[in-house]
Length: 243
Picture 1 (cartoon, rainbow, N blue to C red):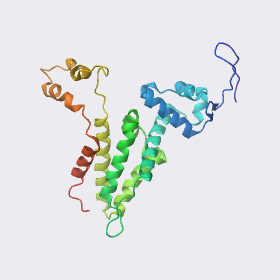
Picture 2: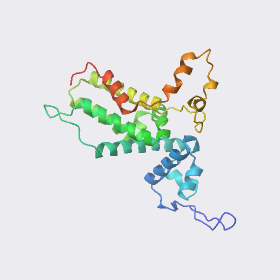
Picture 3: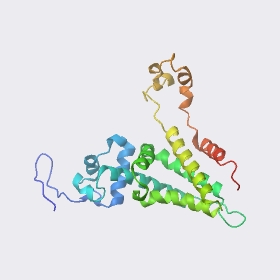
């Protein structure tokens, strides 16, 4: 049941329903607004209250679309995976093999590049790709998230791999891609506005006597590897498997 708020210092009365400045809410609209908040303010800046303000509705109106903060975080991973899906749909189809089966190696590279592209647009969501996998059982993950695994498993099955090799390659691909994203987008700057690289990284906080190699190499660690290093690592992991 909705209730009315009286007029006063907070402005005119407004029904505590799910219709805000963008019209009536939907789950998609709630999750996209949550993504905008996280892109702007980081994961620590996301709350039901802030999301309600973003959509111009009361926080309680959001619970029919995301019944808990955990559900909202799972929803962000879902939106991330949906955006990867769109990237793959818009790109060229993978080349076909001699027997008409997909070139599984090229397709894995394409999935990895698409995922990196979405991660660069939404870096604050990337940690959730790991933490929500640890917190959410397989069968309770949103369907778009499960389709990510289905896509890779189906691709390898179509490529003629045994079940054991399919699982092995899937594990290598998933672990490398997730690990690469986390390393590529890790926080490095201690003072982002500082022009001097050493002070920007806060190297004076790292004891040179105890961590000499880290301190000497830190400025280079900031450099991103990009899609080329992502591809090189993936190729190395797939060595020994037939095309």
